[in-house]
Length: 364
Picture 1 (spheres, rainbow, N blue to C red):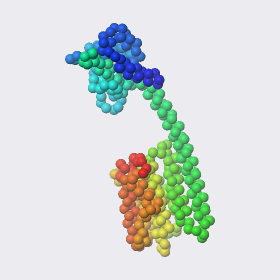
Picture 2 (picture 1 turned 90 degrees about the vertical axis):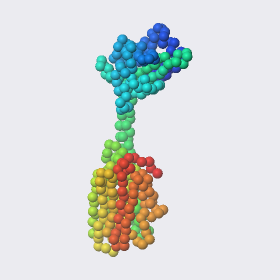
Picture 3 (picture 1 turned 180 degrees about the vertical axis):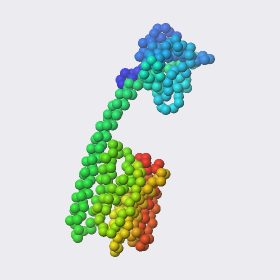
Picture 4 (picture 1 turned 30 degrees about the vertical axis):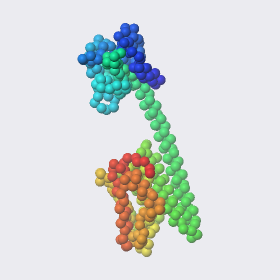
């Protein structure tokens, strides 16, 4: 890698050489260029711009002898841009100055070379453009070494991340269990509802880490699977006879920043339904649907219970649930619809668009 950096610096120094136009007329200077470990070619800027010189390194990379290049335009160079654009190196050399770009030079005599291309117009003493000098710096070996090093680092970091996620998941599971145990022990002496809610939120996050640790990469979470696991967790924690769960989910990948607040919202709404929606009733139905239509996803959390009390809205301003809902609005451009009526139950719908929820958005 050091050699390539030195070569790039050598190109910059060469292009900055004083009176380079005069030097190119000198045979000793051309013999010097023959020894430079950088591929160099020079064209003369006349009515028709044609190559007048190329050094051995240029011949080696392009597979074209000096005799083949002499008197030919830059378009004779074989190759294509590495940027994905349909740009040939010859056209880029003529159309740009300084660093032109990275190209793959096709050479029938050897494996194709990946090179950084530099181009500079050289003026004579009168300021008239006289020559164009192009330099090719072979970066293929450097890039390959860098790619291998980067891939190794990524593998190591992935393993470390998975180990961290596994430990965090286990610790969260233990914390939630301790909180629920303390809440049961405190029943009759204080209000345990805040402890139950805290334990539920921790379990929702723990399930998220579990989902992340089960995949090679934690970039996206299947929202349908994740919400199903949250529903199972909430039902286990708040088992109520006579309550039926209507669960329907589609596979729908979202970023972690979207999955986490969605899981917390669903956890809270399911808990609210189990604890308060069916007071004085023998049973009822709780609905959790997370359905995708190809354009986005609708998450519905509903019950056929007593509905919200008069004067109460969800989410309540100043409460954590309101902050979580706002996080979803910001991170996933989510839209909320809340419906409730006395005796008619409560229904909350969260609407996502795929373009907003699939990409990682910055947290607020």
